[in-house]
Image (cartoon, rainbow, N blue to C red):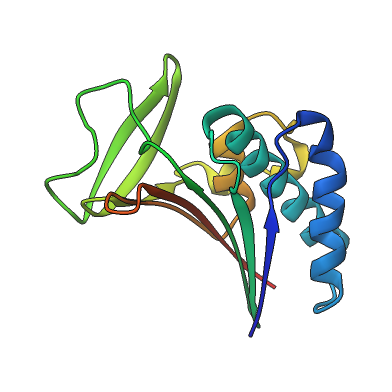
Length: 169
């Protein structure tokens, strides 16, 4: 198992070079197809954009874990938990339930509640769409489509947010 931690830049102008740095670090440990490189690039760009836009943590980082045949990309930052526009909020009262939540008007996502502070993004349309044809600005939804699994977890004691992306290598 290989673990790599890379501090997230605070400047949007650094997103592209940071993404290339992530790919270079991964390439030292595992061969990546061009299709896998594109998925990783989309995921990292969206996670870093999310961090720059929503986190004030100067020590936010991307942690890469290679545990063949799985790659986990995790964005970790300290801050407020994720908020939805509707009545459903963390902590959830019921686990093992699928619900539709909104982060902003006209931007809804289906999620599966795992526990009080953790949920998995669900993609009901994955079979009908191809991530290769999407533009790179659909945020959390594009990460859901590009990954094999995408979860969010909040630790209320540490005020730590984790966006956890799993890919099969």
